[in-house]
Amino acid sequence: MYKSVLENPLCLEGFELQHILEYPENFSNSTGNNSVVTRMKQGLELYNDKFLSDLRFVIPEDGKFTITADVRAAMKKRVKYQPVSEVQTDYKVLQAQCTCAVGVVPAYCKHVFTLLHAISDYSKQKLYAAPTAKLQTWHQPKAVKTVPLPCQEVFGKPSTYEGPSNTNFNWGALKDFSLPIFDACMESVEAKYKLTIPLPAVACSNIGINEFPDDLTLRKMLFINMHYSKDLSELHEIEKKTVEQKSLEWQNGRKIHLTGSNIKDIATRVKDFENLAASIRRKKDMDISFIPAVAYGIQNEEYVRQWYIARNPQCVVRKTGLVIHPVYQYIAASPDGLIKSGDDYMLLEIK
Image (cartoon, rainbow, N blue to C red):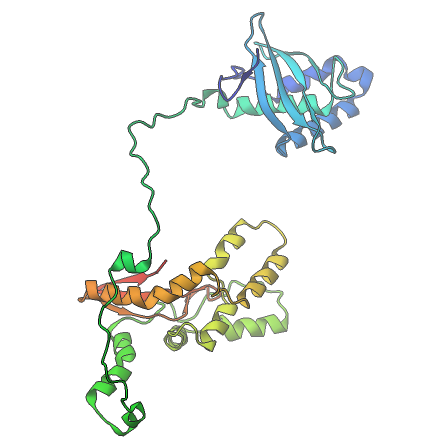
């Protein structure tokens, strides 16, 4: 009865490429060396491309292992072949056969060599020594599932204050008043900005590092110099101007910078980078505020900021704009707030 290598170790620790090469010596003179070498190479390619699965074997009783696996056909996705090989405990391959059209004994088809390469790699990586038992979980704490709740229930109940009963106040007459309270309200954003540090906050030179290719067109060079070669004072000014994150300047700034929503696509892409760049550019022009999760976050950002201030009155919390990396200036972020607690600073991100 066949045993899977996932449940029982295949104890062929010394099986290697040399033993694969010795196998076709018995019949390579009659079939042609070139044919054997070609099929060995094809077998290695099939193994590297993960065409083989379910490696299994029969525990030897007569001094030899009977090993088999499933190998998908190269040209037919739904067809699988089962090559079988007999290997002695001294690693000599006795014979092999396969269910494909040319798999009669002694078989030297590419599926047989796929199986032999799998055995060699299994031995080379010492997978026979890997643990197969499932780890005990009785001593581990059980996972606690949380139930999503409305923001108001998490952070506290909303105020029950209904406001003044007389709403016939003439707001247009405010332009004729000059009271300190109005000046303080108008300058509250500026005051909070002065109490904190400007962003980006980093100790570095005022000029970014140029890591762009040398063979760029004139148009691309001008674009880079215009948008990605700013000094720290300019970056601070951009962040200050884009505090209201729905402004036109904030939206235009995000279009020409990579943000957190793009990082996964970039990190996992291995080809077609031009198509990826075009896709990112298209998404930058899309309005995603209609997505329920995004709309919920936008709606509750100010509420959470005020809740945090109420719970931590010793802290200063201000809105932030578009924060551009001072060195790699094609990267940017838009945190939901900057918190100052004593001499420490933290970013606020509301989810």
